Image 1 (spheres, rainbow, N blue to C red):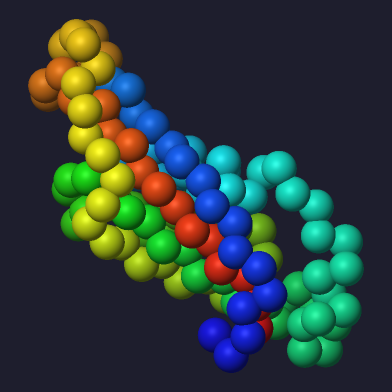
Image 2: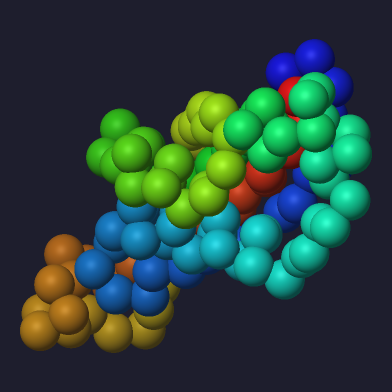
Length: 119
């Protein structure tokens, strides 16, 4: 990315099931769903959203190789999207293990997201 215009951050949690993709999607949604960028096109080459570049960085507490990158990319409606997954976030007890929720243990996974937008 040549120029970063802004960065949005978010947090996502999967309370039961230990699904890092689900928690990651929630983190990306948390980062982008409370914004409107009506003047963004003015800053992009050719004034086109198709020339936007988006870099999603996810900090996950475990199973980083299990994050479904295509599902993360699908959360971003425009531009060229890249995803980077690093160790981070948090795994902490949910206080209960629920087999009917597909729990493997009593952990909940908390993922942090930084969504960089530019060109």
